[in-house]
Length: 365
Image 1 (cartoon, rainbow, N blue to C red):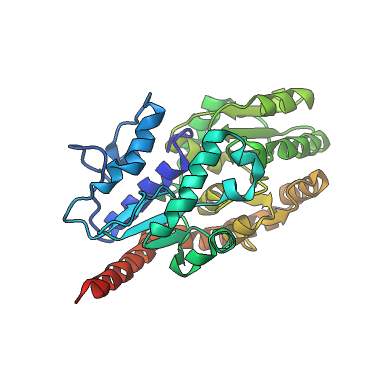
Image 2 (image 1 turned 120 degrees about the vertical axis):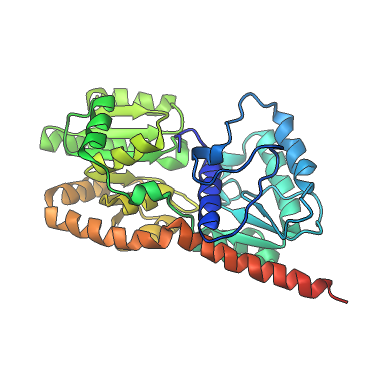
């Protein structure tokens, strides 16, 4: 994964990999002549850059309707269903309903227009996958007529996060990012408002002051002026490493190099970062929100997302107790087994079988 690769791309890559592992044949659409390679980063497909805005609109309205005749089912990895019912059953994955739940994410006309379109078209889907019970409840709230179509299947974690890393790999990551301070707190995610990174920076500042050292590593999808401003205002420049884009190999090494994984988000559909941390065996301190609570369970410390004092206490507690961190690491790895893509893909396979079987029964005279 590249940080900068979208969450949808990461999800699609993992699902195709998992389905391939359990013997489900997947054929891609939209790249004529390009074979899907499940074991290659990005499925072996080169990234598309510089596409005009209307290309996505055209694909969602017209291109995606050209389903190969041999396909039993179409999986759409996000909420953009075509504007009508198709002969082939369609399963749509709903990662979150953030734009419906939070006003800040539908301020622009393009956003409002797009999610109005989603509201109109989602009912055409044969079945919906919610990636958490929290997302299922949001679907119930905003699309109550579709509640009977929903199956909850969590996201998966790439197998690289379950694998041990060598001392050489750790050293490469430390040298690459010039990591020299401890304790080391890692954050992986975006920097938009709901991610609440400023709270983490403020808490880390106090923790590092008390311990006379420390390092905050922020791995984000893209640079963000507000985060830079907070870092400067709190005098955290010397204690903060920011990187907008890294390889999956480096990312995995950063997880293993961290003492704590921190995730202060105030709203999520799932919580991929915490799931990756569980797989890598990193102690977790995270904001106590419904979706993240589902992922982390009792295997991490959950705090009120915006209360800095809660963060300071939880970070201090984790750093000061080797027995606690060892317990969190051991139990976290066990919990992460639920997020292996092979297991997640089997749940999709079962759903696909039900959908195809139901469609076959309704098509019979």
